[in-house]
Length: 102
Length: 314
Image 1 (tube, chains in turn red, yellow):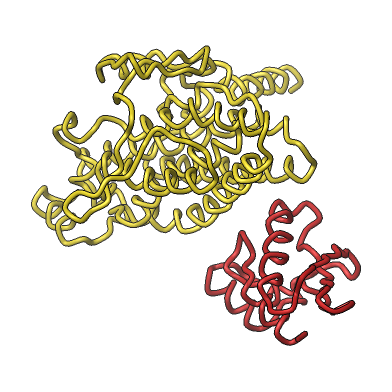
Image 2 (cartoon, rainbow over the protein chains, first blue to last red):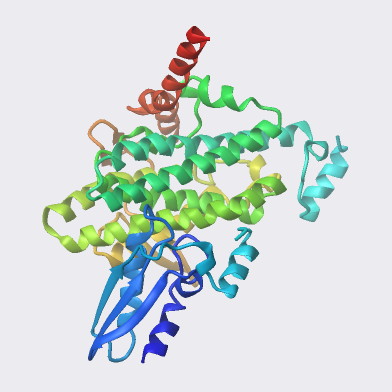
């Protein structure tokens, strides 16, 4: 199940850039706490992220579509702080193709 | 400078124009005019949105509002920067023009007085901007502008999302919140419809189309806007005075009120029983709306104050 949840999160796009949240490196952990209850540790690229509201909503909506998921709890965490080093190779390529040097 | 024949050939072939060397004086004039309308529209949206963003219901919402304003200023900068490359003085354009000579849509002269009105502006006005700029991005014969719009389009998506998400939330909340939303939609919908200008049958000739500065006519752009906004409003249970008809197998969006008609800007109220002429609309646009001077002063005043202070100290 956990693998499916990670796969589902690769379908959630950042609202401002053409990159998904997993490749962006902002998902720190996914776990099933009890049957059907999923907990996600997530951070933002900046504390003043103007899209944070939308990202939380998209993560919840997407994971709730997975079979067996009835509740999604999202913890916003700031430790460790996000840096560009947390991006995957695929994420870096996507942003470079879009014209952003990372 | 190219000969008229060379220039006509460039336009006809679909090639991009990259510098003033490849333009006729008339093309340059028309390009500048189109850029000024675009720059002025983006610029004025900043003070207009700011006055309403201050009423955000949470820090997070305020941050989103401010981020959108930052985007709009950057979009304005793209247009003014290109104008500078084309020989205009950016500083004069922004800080020394009379408020009435700014060329942005009349809608921004009517104040946004609440967070609800701001998110409807994000849903309606930014959609109008999206259609107009999307068309330019797609079709514009001037290369530097076309490429600059790549990022603009992406950011406008974010503004639309803010508008739509909040409109949906407020509608779902029901009660007084939903009534406020409906009131905002009632005056802002027809203003957005007007945004696209004269209907095609009143506008005999478009140099902008001829020069491929844009690709779609006013009515085509208006139909595009209606085709996105009307279904969305219906989906979130907000009523709008327009409906879809199918003619010769094609969807056509029809307005349920006389277009154009009388608008009381102070009361933010349309009188659908009072059709008017386009001449009267053009006259209202020329006169500008209630907050034109105030909006322009919001960025001009401090510039001049700073200059004065700076001058005294040095």
